[in-house]
Length: 287
Image (cartoon, rainbow, N blue to C red; front, side, top):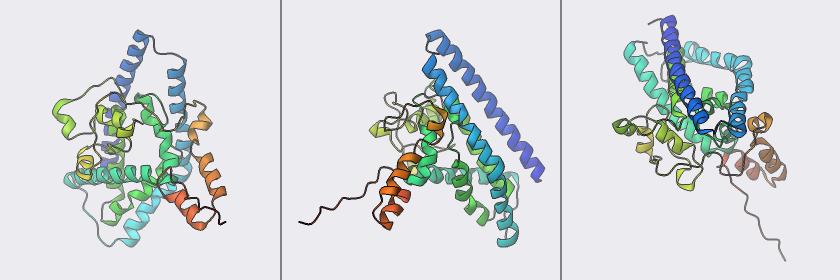
């Protein structure tokens, strides 16, 4: 299978999910107009979500294009073996990319320096198709690093890119409240119901349902939560800004303040790599 064939197939998959997402978005707009809820705040949230594509795409164009070339360097100069690219191994690449995405996504919730980027995606109080393109400027950097093991085990860079694209394209349609539960599919696939849970900031919904295409990873690794009542969306802390700059860099000011106030190298390390919300234990002054 040639690189051109893989690229065309990836483009078709991306286009198909884009069309599905566009149809759902039109339904969301019509429903909001019918209910009279398409007002200032909802529109502002959509604009803020769409605005995140500006820094994200600039980073992708000027930094990540070159960074992804590193995959080819590894494949050609470091790895003496390769997995032949066929229809079967391409399907396997999607499966491995989906498992990789689960851990990439989970770690982004558990490591604060990564959360500063992924929190952008979670900062909207609304759940709609436009929320699906709400990205932190540097999220692609962590994704690129997380998928290096796929190259190391022998997948061609084209197969890795195809896997990444397919997993991300699939998620276009699951950012919605328009679609309810989908019966038996809920047991296997990541669905809008499961992903609404993931965007919930209620205690029982926090850090659940990390899957990309398959929800089986969450069931396997103990992070699955069924949707019960409608979640409250957004960050746990009180963040309601629709100012694009505040949305793009919402978590960085507090991180900078914490680093400035750090009293030891350990504190600096923990502020960067511990779970979000970690605070140093204050010692009592000696009498």
